[in-house]
Image (cartoon, rainbow, N blue to C red; front, side, top):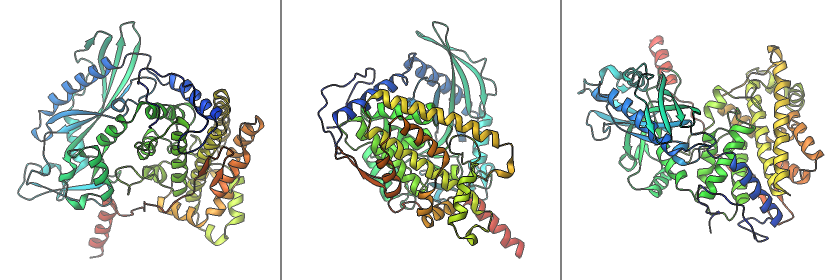
Length: 540
Protein backbone atom coordinates (compact mmCIF):
# COMPACT_ATOMS: atom_id res chain seq x y z
CA UNK A 1 0.00 0.00 0.00
CA UNK A 2 1.51 3.33 -1.02
CA UNK A 3 1.11 6.75 0.49
CA UNK A 4 -2.41 8.21 0.32
CA UNK A 5 -3.42 8.50 -3.33
CA UNK A 6 -5.53 11.60 -3.77
CA UNK A 7 -6.48 13.48 -6.95
CA UNK A 8 -4.19 16.47 -7.47
CA UNK A 9 -7.10 18.90 -7.60
CA UNK A 10 -8.66 17.83 -4.28
CA UNK A 11 -7.12 17.17 -0.86
CA UNK A 12 -9.31 16.08 2.03
CA UNK A 13 -8.55 15.45 5.65
CA UNK A 14 -8.17 11.78 6.45
CA UNK A 15 -10.17 10.09 9.19
CA UNK A 16 -10.37 6.66 10.82
CA UNK A 17 -6.60 6.28 10.92
CA UNK A 18 -5.54 3.13 12.82
CA UNK A 19 -3.21 3.41 15.79
CA UNK A 20 -0.04 2.12 14.12
CA UNK A 21 0.95 2.68 10.53
CA UNK A 22 3.73 2.03 8.07
CA UNK A 23 7.31 0.96 8.60
CA UNK A 24 7.51 3.12 11.73
CA UNK A 25 5.01 3.26 14.59
CA UNK A 26 3.16 6.42 15.61
CA UNK A 27 0.23 7.15 17.83
CA UNK A 28 -3.08 7.93 16.17
CA UNK A 29 -2.91 11.45 17.55
CA UNK A 30 0.51 12.13 15.99
CA UNK A 31 -0.48 10.75 12.60
CA UNK A 32 -3.63 12.87 12.57
CA UNK A 33 -1.76 16.00 13.72
CA UNK A 34 0.82 15.73 10.95
CA UNK A 35 -1.84 14.95 8.34
CA UNK A 36 -3.86 18.02 9.34
CA UNK A 37 -0.72 20.19 9.31
CA UNK A 38 0.15 18.97 5.80
CA UNK A 39 -3.40 19.71 4.62
CA UNK A 40 -3.29 23.18 6.13
CA UNK A 41 0.10 24.05 4.64
CA UNK A 42 -0.71 22.48 1.30
CA UNK A 43 -3.67 24.81 0.76
CA UNK A 44 -1.17 27.68 0.72
CA UNK A 45 0.85 26.07 -2.08
CA UNK A 46 -2.04 25.79 -4.55
CA UNK A 47 -2.34 28.11 -7.53
CA UNK A 48 -4.95 30.83 -7.22
CA UNK A 49 -5.17 31.08 -10.99
CA UNK A 50 -5.68 28.55 -13.75
CA UNK A 51 -2.30 27.17 -14.88
CA UNK A 52 -3.07 25.04 -17.96
CA UNK A 53 -3.66 27.95 -20.35
CA UNK A 54 -0.60 29.77 -19.00
CA UNK A 55 1.60 26.74 -19.66
CA UNK A 56 0.24 26.30 -23.17
CA UNK A 57 0.64 30.00 -24.00
CA UNK A 58 4.21 30.15 -22.64
CA UNK A 59 5.23 27.03 -24.57
CA UNK A 60 3.73 28.36 -27.79
CA UNK A 61 5.34 31.80 -27.50
CA UNK A 62 8.77 30.45 -26.60
CA UNK A 63 8.64 27.88 -29.41
CA UNK A 64 7.90 30.64 -31.92
CA UNK A 65 10.83 32.72 -30.65
CA UNK A 66 13.43 29.97 -30.28
CA UNK A 67 12.75 27.81 -33.32
CA UNK A 68 12.55 30.75 -35.73
CA UNK A 69 15.66 32.42 -34.28
CA UNK A 70 17.74 29.24 -34.42
CA UNK A 71 17.23 28.89 -38.18
CA UNK A 72 19.79 31.66 -38.69
CA UNK A 73 22.58 29.16 -37.97
CA UNK A 74 22.00 25.52 -39.07
CA UNK A 75 24.44 24.26 -36.43
CA UNK A 76 22.20 25.56 -33.65
CA UNK A 77 18.86 24.72 -35.22
CA UNK A 78 16.37 23.76 -32.53
CA UNK A 79 14.32 20.62 -33.09
CA UNK A 80 11.92 21.05 -30.16
CA UNK A 81 11.44 22.48 -26.70
CA UNK A 82 11.30 20.16 -23.70
CA UNK A 83 9.53 21.44 -20.59
CA UNK A 84 11.32 20.39 -17.39
CA UNK A 85 11.33 21.50 -13.78
CA UNK A 86 8.55 22.00 -11.27
CA UNK A 87 5.85 23.08 -13.74
CA UNK A 88 6.26 19.80 -15.61
CA UNK A 89 6.59 17.82 -12.37
CA UNK A 90 3.40 19.36 -10.91
CA UNK A 91 5.29 20.51 -7.81
CA UNK A 92 5.38 24.28 -8.45
CA UNK A 93 3.95 26.19 -5.52
CA UNK A 94 1.87 29.34 -5.09
CA UNK A 95 2.17 30.95 -8.54
CA UNK A 96 2.84 29.48 -12.04
CA UNK A 97 5.53 32.06 -12.74
CA UNK A 98 8.68 30.05 -13.54
CA UNK A 99 9.25 27.79 -16.55
CA UNK A 100 12.34 25.83 -17.56
CA UNK A 101 12.92 24.46 -21.06
CA UNK A 102 15.59 22.51 -22.87
CA UNK A 103 16.06 23.89 -26.38
CA UNK A 104 16.95 20.58 -28.05
CA UNK A 105 19.42 20.87 -30.93
CA UNK A 106 18.60 19.04 -34.16
CA UNK A 107 22.01 17.40 -34.11
CA UNK A 108 23.15 13.86 -33.34
CA UNK A 109 26.47 14.13 -31.49
CA UNK A 110 26.87 10.35 -31.37
CA UNK A 111 25.84 9.58 -34.95
CA UNK A 112 27.88 12.38 -36.52
CA UNK A 113 31.38 11.20 -37.39
CA UNK A 114 32.91 14.61 -36.81
CA UNK A 115 32.30 14.35 -33.06
CA UNK A 116 33.73 12.05 -30.42
CA UNK A 117 32.66 11.93 -26.78
CA UNK A 118 35.31 11.60 -24.08
CA UNK A 119 35.14 11.54 -20.28
CA UNK A 120 35.34 15.00 -18.71
CA UNK A 121 37.71 16.10 -16.00
CA UNK A 122 35.34 14.80 -13.32
CA UNK A 123 32.21 12.62 -13.04
CA UNK A 124 29.11 14.17 -14.54
CA UNK A 125 30.94 15.94 -17.36
CA UNK A 126 31.78 15.07 -20.96
CA UNK A 127 34.14 16.55 -23.54
CA UNK A 128 32.99 16.80 -27.15
CA UNK A 129 36.02 16.29 -29.34
CA UNK A 130 35.81 17.78 -32.85
CA UNK A 131 37.76 15.73 -35.36
CA UNK A 132 40.19 17.43 -37.70
CA UNK A 133 38.13 16.67 -40.83
CA UNK A 134 35.44 19.14 -39.70
CA UNK A 135 35.73 22.83 -40.46
CA UNK A 136 32.09 23.57 -39.68
CA UNK A 137 32.65 23.94 -35.94
CA UNK A 138 36.13 25.47 -35.90
CA UNK A 139 34.93 28.85 -34.63
CA UNK A 140 33.21 27.11 -31.71
CA UNK A 141 36.25 25.15 -30.57
CA UNK A 142 38.76 25.60 -27.83
CA UNK A 143 41.69 23.56 -28.97
CA UNK A 144 40.34 20.22 -30.13
CA UNK A 145 37.13 20.43 -28.11
CA UNK A 146 33.77 22.08 -28.59
CA UNK A 147 33.66 24.95 -26.11
CA UNK A 148 30.48 25.20 -24.00
CA UNK A 149 31.09 28.90 -23.40
CA UNK A 150 31.51 29.80 -27.07
CA UNK A 151 28.47 27.71 -28.07
CA UNK A 152 26.36 29.38 -25.40
CA UNK A 153 27.37 32.86 -26.58
CA UNK A 154 26.60 32.00 -30.20
CA UNK A 155 23.23 30.55 -29.24
CA UNK A 156 22.36 33.67 -27.25
CA UNK A 157 23.39 35.88 -30.18
CA UNK A 158 20.70 34.26 -32.32
CA UNK A 159 17.90 35.26 -29.94
CA UNK A 160 15.98 38.51 -30.49
CA UNK A 161 17.14 41.41 -28.36
CA UNK A 162 13.59 42.74 -27.96
CA UNK A 163 10.51 40.63 -27.30
CA UNK A 164 8.09 43.34 -26.16
CA UNK A 165 6.75 43.72 -29.70
CA UNK A 166 6.02 40.00 -30.16
CA UNK A 167 2.37 39.30 -30.86
CA UNK A 168 0.54 38.40 -27.62
CA UNK A 169 -1.10 34.99 -27.25
CA UNK A 170 -4.72 35.11 -26.15
CA UNK A 171 -6.54 32.28 -24.37
CA UNK A 172 -10.03 32.04 -22.79
CA UNK A 173 -8.59 32.81 -19.33
CA UNK A 174 -6.07 35.53 -20.20
CA UNK A 175 -3.34 36.91 -22.48
CA UNK A 176 0.42 36.36 -22.50
CA UNK A 177 2.70 39.29 -23.45
CA UNK A 178 6.42 39.55 -24.12
CA UNK A 179 8.43 41.97 -22.03
CA UNK A 180 12.25 41.73 -22.12
CA UNK A 181 15.15 39.33 -22.56
CA UNK A 182 18.08 38.72 -20.19
CA UNK A 183 20.63 36.54 -22.00
CA UNK A 184 18.78 33.20 -22.27
CA UNK A 185 15.98 34.18 -19.89
CA UNK A 186 12.73 35.66 -21.20
CA UNK A 187 10.61 37.87 -18.96
CA UNK A 188 6.93 37.66 -19.90
CA UNK A 189 3.75 38.73 -18.17
CA UNK A 190 0.28 37.24 -18.04
CA UNK A 191 -2.95 39.24 -17.74
CA UNK A 192 -5.95 37.37 -16.43
CA UNK A 193 -9.42 38.12 -17.77
CA UNK A 194 -10.13 39.89 -14.46
CA UNK A 195 -7.13 42.20 -14.97
CA UNK A 196 -4.68 40.64 -12.49
CA UNK A 197 -1.06 40.33 -13.64
CA UNK A 198 1.61 37.64 -13.18
CA UNK A 199 5.27 38.21 -14.04
CA UNK A 200 6.75 35.08 -15.62
CA UNK A 201 10.43 34.09 -16.04
CA UNK A 202 11.32 31.51 -18.70
CA UNK A 203 14.79 29.93 -18.62
CA UNK A 204 16.07 28.40 -21.88
CA UNK A 205 18.98 25.95 -21.81
CA UNK A 206 20.35 24.72 -25.18
CA UNK A 207 21.09 21.00 -25.16
CA UNK A 208 22.42 18.16 -27.30
CA UNK A 209 20.11 15.12 -26.87
CA UNK A 210 21.73 11.72 -26.30
CA UNK A 211 19.96 8.38 -25.82
CA UNK A 212 21.58 7.23 -22.61
CA UNK A 213 22.04 3.58 -23.59
CA UNK A 214 23.95 4.72 -26.73
CA UNK A 215 26.64 6.45 -24.66
CA UNK A 216 30.06 4.78 -24.50
CA UNK A 217 30.50 2.69 -21.35
CA UNK A 218 33.30 5.02 -20.23
CA UNK A 219 30.69 7.77 -19.80
CA UNK A 220 28.22 5.71 -17.77
CA UNK A 221 27.85 4.48 -14.20
CA UNK A 222 26.31 1.19 -13.09
CA UNK A 223 23.75 2.79 -10.78
CA UNK A 224 22.80 5.31 -13.48
CA UNK A 225 22.25 2.46 -15.98
CA UNK A 226 19.78 0.82 -13.59
CA UNK A 227 17.87 3.96 -12.70
CA UNK A 228 17.59 5.18 -16.28
CA UNK A 229 16.36 1.76 -17.43
CA UNK A 230 13.64 1.86 -14.76
CA UNK A 231 12.27 5.06 -16.28
CA UNK A 232 12.42 3.79 -19.87
CA UNK A 233 14.84 1.98 -22.22
CA UNK A 234 15.04 4.92 -24.64
CA UNK A 235 15.34 7.63 -22.01
CA UNK A 236 17.49 10.58 -23.08
CA UNK A 237 20.05 12.57 -21.18
CA UNK A 238 21.37 15.91 -22.41
CA UNK A 239 24.74 17.59 -22.83
CA UNK A 240 24.30 21.21 -21.82
CA UNK A 241 26.84 24.09 -22.01
CA UNK A 242 27.31 24.40 -18.27
CA UNK A 243 31.03 23.90 -17.79
CA UNK A 244 32.93 22.26 -14.97
CA UNK A 245 34.41 25.65 -14.16
CA UNK A 246 33.05 29.18 -13.80
CA UNK A 247 35.87 30.29 -16.06
CA UNK A 248 36.22 30.29 -19.82
CA UNK A 249 38.95 27.64 -19.68
CA UNK A 250 36.38 24.86 -19.11
CA UNK A 251 35.95 22.42 -22.00
CA UNK A 252 33.49 20.03 -20.34
CA UNK A 253 29.77 19.83 -21.01
CA UNK A 254 27.48 18.94 -18.13
CA UNK A 255 25.62 15.61 -18.34
CA UNK A 256 22.11 16.67 -17.42
CA UNK A 257 19.45 14.22 -16.30
CA UNK A 258 16.90 16.98 -15.67
CA UNK A 259 14.32 15.43 -17.99
CA UNK A 260 14.68 11.99 -16.37
CA UNK A 261 14.42 13.61 -12.92
CA UNK A 262 11.24 15.42 -13.96
CA UNK A 263 9.76 12.17 -15.28
CA UNK A 264 10.52 10.44 -11.99
CA UNK A 265 8.94 13.18 -9.87
CA UNK A 266 5.95 13.52 -12.20
CA UNK A 267 5.17 9.79 -11.86
CA UNK A 268 5.08 9.94 -8.05
CA UNK A 269 1.66 9.49 -6.49
CA UNK A 270 -0.35 12.50 -5.39
CA UNK A 271 0.38 12.04 -1.68
CA UNK A 272 4.14 12.31 -2.14
CA UNK A 273 3.76 15.32 -4.41
CA UNK A 274 1.63 16.91 -1.74
CA UNK A 275 4.38 16.43 0.86
CA UNK A 276 6.94 17.64 -1.69
CA UNK A 277 5.07 20.91 -2.17
CA UNK A 278 4.69 21.46 1.58
CA UNK A 279 8.40 20.85 2.21
CA UNK A 280 9.26 23.18 -0.64
CA UNK A 281 7.04 25.82 0.95
CA UNK A 282 8.79 25.39 4.31
CA UNK A 283 12.35 25.10 2.96
CA UNK A 284 12.41 27.66 0.17
CA UNK A 285 9.68 30.13 1.05
CA UNK A 286 8.46 30.44 4.61
CA UNK A 287 11.53 30.04 6.79
CA UNK A 288 14.80 29.12 5.19
CA UNK A 289 14.47 30.31 1.62
CA UNK A 290 17.85 31.99 1.34
CA UNK A 291 19.92 29.13 2.71
CA UNK A 292 22.02 27.77 -0.13
CA UNK A 293 21.74 24.24 1.26
CA UNK A 294 17.94 24.00 1.28
CA UNK A 295 17.30 24.72 -2.38
CA UNK A 296 14.42 23.22 -4.31
CA UNK A 297 16.90 21.01 -6.21
CA UNK A 298 18.45 19.68 -2.99
CA UNK A 299 14.94 18.83 -1.79
CA UNK A 300 14.13 17.15 -5.10
CA UNK A 301 17.34 15.12 -4.91
CA UNK A 302 16.38 13.84 -1.45
CA UNK A 303 12.84 13.01 -2.55
CA UNK A 304 14.03 11.09 -5.63
CA UNK A 305 15.88 8.67 -3.38
CA UNK A 306 12.58 7.93 -1.60
CA UNK A 307 10.25 8.28 -4.60
CA UNK A 308 9.73 4.54 -5.14
CA UNK A 309 9.56 3.50 -1.49
CA UNK A 310 6.07 2.79 -0.22
CA UNK A 311 4.70 4.72 2.74
CA UNK A 312 1.37 4.49 4.53
CA UNK A 313 1.19 8.06 5.80
CA UNK A 314 2.70 11.49 5.43
CA UNK A 315 4.76 11.47 8.63
CA UNK A 316 6.61 8.32 7.59
CA UNK A 317 7.55 9.92 4.26
CA UNK A 318 8.57 13.23 5.88
CA UNK A 319 10.83 11.49 8.40
CA UNK A 320 12.69 9.66 5.66
CA UNK A 321 13.37 13.02 3.97
CA UNK A 322 14.56 14.68 7.21
CA UNK A 323 16.80 11.69 8.04
CA UNK A 324 18.25 11.76 4.51
CA UNK A 325 19.07 15.48 4.86
CA UNK A 326 20.60 14.97 8.33
CA UNK A 327 22.91 12.26 7.02
CA UNK A 328 23.89 14.36 4.01
CA UNK A 329 24.78 17.34 6.21
CA UNK A 330 26.88 14.99 8.34
CA UNK A 331 28.64 13.69 5.22
CA UNK A 332 29.21 17.19 3.76
CA UNK A 333 27.63 16.04 0.53
CA UNK A 334 24.29 15.36 -1.09
CA UNK A 335 24.76 13.00 -4.05
CA UNK A 336 22.45 13.50 -7.01
CA UNK A 337 20.12 10.63 -7.83
CA UNK A 338 21.42 9.77 -11.29
CA UNK A 339 25.06 10.77 -10.72
CA UNK A 340 26.00 9.64 -7.24
CA UNK A 341 29.59 10.84 -7.66
CA UNK A 342 28.52 14.47 -7.89
CA UNK A 343 27.65 16.73 -4.96
CA UNK A 344 24.63 19.04 -5.13
CA UNK A 345 26.29 21.32 -2.57
CA UNK A 346 29.77 21.56 -4.15
CA UNK A 347 29.45 25.10 -5.53
CA UNK A 348 27.62 26.28 -2.42
CA UNK A 349 30.38 25.03 -0.14
CA UNK A 350 33.23 26.28 -2.30
CA UNK A 351 31.87 29.52 -3.70
CA UNK A 352 28.83 30.93 -1.95
CA UNK A 353 28.20 29.39 1.45
CA UNK A 354 25.48 31.36 3.22
CA UNK A 355 25.42 31.73 6.95
CA UNK A 356 23.07 29.90 9.28
CA UNK A 357 20.08 31.79 7.95
CA UNK A 358 20.78 34.22 5.12
CA UNK A 359 23.43 36.67 6.28
CA UNK A 360 26.77 36.30 4.61
CA UNK A 361 29.05 35.71 7.56
CA UNK A 362 29.06 33.73 10.75
CA UNK A 363 29.83 36.00 13.68
CA UNK A 364 30.04 34.32 17.03
CA UNK A 365 32.96 34.61 19.44
CA UNK A 366 31.35 31.92 21.58
CA UNK A 367 31.69 29.27 18.85
CA UNK A 368 35.18 30.40 17.90
CA UNK A 369 36.32 30.28 21.54
CA UNK A 370 35.02 26.71 21.92
CA UNK A 371 36.97 25.59 18.87
CA UNK A 372 40.17 27.27 20.05
CA UNK A 373 39.84 25.64 23.49
CA UNK A 374 39.29 22.12 22.14
CA UNK A 375 41.60 21.96 19.11
CA UNK A 376 45.38 21.72 19.16
CA UNK A 377 46.84 25.18 18.60
CA UNK A 378 49.17 23.89 15.89
CA UNK A 379 46.13 22.99 13.77
CA UNK A 380 44.81 26.55 14.03
CA UNK A 381 48.04 28.37 13.13
CA UNK A 382 47.09 28.54 9.47
CA UNK A 383 44.33 31.18 9.03
CA UNK A 384 43.06 29.27 5.99
CA UNK A 385 41.55 26.63 8.30
CA UNK A 386 38.86 28.99 9.60
CA UNK A 387 36.75 29.09 6.42
CA UNK A 388 36.53 25.28 6.61
CA UNK A 389 35.51 25.51 10.27
CA UNK A 390 32.91 28.10 9.36
CA UNK A 391 31.31 25.81 6.77
CA UNK A 392 31.57 22.84 9.15
CA UNK A 393 29.65 24.73 11.85
CA UNK A 394 26.98 25.80 9.38
CA UNK A 395 26.55 22.20 8.20
CA UNK A 396 26.27 21.08 11.83
CA UNK A 397 23.60 23.70 12.44
CA UNK A 398 21.52 22.36 9.56
CA UNK A 399 22.05 18.75 10.66
CA UNK A 400 20.60 19.72 14.03
CA UNK A 401 17.72 21.55 12.35
CA UNK A 402 16.76 18.33 10.53
CA UNK A 403 16.90 16.48 13.86
CA UNK A 404 14.76 19.21 15.38
CA UNK A 405 12.14 18.66 12.66
CA UNK A 406 12.24 14.90 13.31
CA UNK A 407 11.52 15.40 17.02
CA UNK A 408 8.79 17.99 16.38
CA UNK A 409 6.92 15.70 13.98
CA UNK A 410 7.44 12.46 15.96
CA UNK A 411 5.95 14.00 19.11
CA UNK A 412 3.34 16.24 17.47
CA UNK A 413 0.17 16.59 19.54
CA UNK A 414 -1.80 18.77 17.13
CA UNK A 415 -1.47 20.58 13.82
CA UNK A 416 -1.77 23.89 15.69
CA UNK A 417 1.25 23.00 17.83
CA UNK A 418 3.30 22.24 14.72
CA UNK A 419 2.24 25.48 13.07
CA UNK A 420 3.09 27.42 16.23
CA UNK A 421 6.52 25.75 16.37
CA UNK A 422 7.31 26.82 12.83
CA UNK A 423 6.14 30.36 13.55
CA UNK A 424 8.58 30.47 16.49
CA UNK A 425 11.37 29.29 14.20
CA UNK A 426 10.43 32.09 11.82
CA UNK A 427 10.60 34.66 14.62
CA UNK A 428 14.01 33.45 15.79
CA UNK A 429 15.16 33.54 12.17
CA UNK A 430 14.20 37.21 11.85
CA UNK A 431 15.85 38.19 15.14
CA UNK A 432 19.04 36.31 14.27
CA UNK A 433 19.31 38.09 10.94
CA UNK A 434 19.03 41.46 12.61
CA UNK A 435 21.64 40.43 15.20
CA UNK A 436 24.15 39.32 12.55
CA UNK A 437 23.49 42.16 10.13
CA UNK A 438 24.41 44.73 12.79
CA UNK A 439 27.83 43.10 13.11
CA UNK A 440 28.53 42.81 9.41
CA UNK A 441 29.74 46.40 9.48
CA UNK A 442 32.90 45.33 11.28
CA UNK A 443 34.69 43.08 8.79
CA UNK A 444 37.50 42.23 11.23
CA UNK A 445 35.21 40.11 13.42
CA UNK A 446 33.71 38.13 10.57
CA UNK A 447 34.98 34.73 9.52
CA UNK A 448 35.48 34.05 5.87
CA UNK A 449 32.91 31.75 4.30
CA UNK A 450 33.34 29.09 1.62
CA UNK A 451 36.14 26.53 1.56
CA UNK A 452 37.25 23.54 -0.54
CA UNK A 453 34.78 20.74 0.09
CA UNK A 454 37.61 18.25 0.65
CA UNK A 455 38.92 20.42 3.53
CA UNK A 456 35.46 20.63 5.09
CA UNK A 457 34.86 16.89 4.71
CA UNK A 458 38.24 16.07 6.25
CA UNK A 459 37.71 18.48 9.12
CA UNK A 460 34.29 17.05 9.97
CA UNK A 461 35.74 13.54 9.84
CA UNK A 462 38.72 14.31 12.09
CA UNK A 463 36.86 16.48 14.62
CA UNK A 464 33.41 14.92 14.67
CA UNK A 465 33.20 14.76 18.47
CA UNK A 466 34.23 18.40 18.86
CA UNK A 467 31.71 19.59 16.28
CA UNK A 468 28.84 17.57 17.74
CA UNK A 469 29.57 18.99 21.22
CA UNK A 470 29.65 22.63 20.10
CA UNK A 471 27.12 25.02 21.57
CA UNK A 472 25.77 27.01 18.60
CA UNK A 473 24.02 30.02 20.19
CA UNK A 474 21.42 30.55 17.45
CA UNK A 475 20.37 26.91 17.69
CA UNK A 476 20.39 26.94 21.50
CA UNK A 477 18.19 30.03 21.55
CA UNK A 478 15.76 28.36 19.18
CA UNK A 479 15.62 25.13 21.20
CA UNK A 480 15.12 27.01 24.49
CA UNK A 481 12.22 28.94 22.99
CA UNK A 482 10.51 25.78 21.74
CA UNK A 483 11.16 23.96 25.02
CA UNK A 484 9.64 26.85 26.97
CA UNK A 485 6.31 26.12 25.27
CA UNK A 486 6.74 22.35 25.84
CA UNK A 487 6.96 21.62 22.11
CA UNK A 488 10.15 19.55 22.29
CA UNK A 489 11.23 16.22 23.71
CA UNK A 490 14.69 17.25 24.93
CA UNK A 491 15.78 13.69 25.68
CA UNK A 492 15.03 12.65 22.10
CA UNK A 493 16.68 15.78 20.69
CA UNK A 494 19.92 15.39 22.64
CA UNK A 495 20.11 11.65 21.98
CA UNK A 496 19.79 12.14 18.21
CA UNK A 497 22.36 14.96 18.18
CA UNK A 498 24.96 13.21 20.35
CA UNK A 499 24.25 9.51 19.72
CA UNK A 500 22.51 9.65 16.31
CA UNK A 501 19.60 7.46 17.42
CA UNK A 502 16.55 7.37 19.69
CA UNK A 503 13.52 5.15 20.23
CA UNK A 504 10.30 7.01 20.93
CA UNK A 505 7.63 5.67 23.29
CA UNK A 506 5.38 4.58 20.43
CA UNK A 507 8.10 2.21 19.24
CA UNK A 508 9.34 4.54 16.50
CA UNK A 509 13.12 4.12 16.30
CA UNK A 510 15.00 6.83 14.38
CA UNK A 511 18.64 6.53 13.34
CA UNK A 512 20.54 9.43 11.73
CA UNK A 513 23.96 7.80 11.89
CA UNK A 514 26.06 8.59 8.85
CA UNK A 515 27.29 5.89 6.52
CA UNK A 516 30.53 5.89 4.55
CA UNK A 517 30.62 8.60 1.90
CA UNK A 518 29.75 7.53 -1.63
CA UNK A 519 31.19 10.82 -2.85
CA UNK A 520 34.82 11.88 -2.88
CA UNK A 521 35.76 15.36 -4.13
CA UNK A 522 37.66 15.64 -7.38
CA UNK A 523 40.34 18.30 -7.47
CA UNK A 524 41.00 18.09 -11.22
CA UNK A 525 39.32 20.51 -13.59
CA UNK A 526 39.84 21.97 -17.04
CA UNK A 527 41.10 25.19 -15.47
CA UNK A 528 43.65 23.45 -13.28
CA UNK A 529 44.76 21.32 -16.24
CA UNK A 530 45.34 24.46 -18.29
CA UNK A 531 47.27 26.12 -15.49
CA UNK A 532 49.43 23.02 -15.16
CA UNK A 533 50.18 23.06 -18.90
CA UNK A 534 51.11 26.74 -18.72
CA UNK A 535 53.54 26.03 -15.88
CA UNK A 536 55.13 23.20 -17.88
CA UNK A 537 55.63 25.36 -20.95
CA UNK A 538 56.87 28.26 -18.81
CA UNK A 539 59.50 26.05 -17.17
CA UNK A 540 60.67 24.92 -20.61
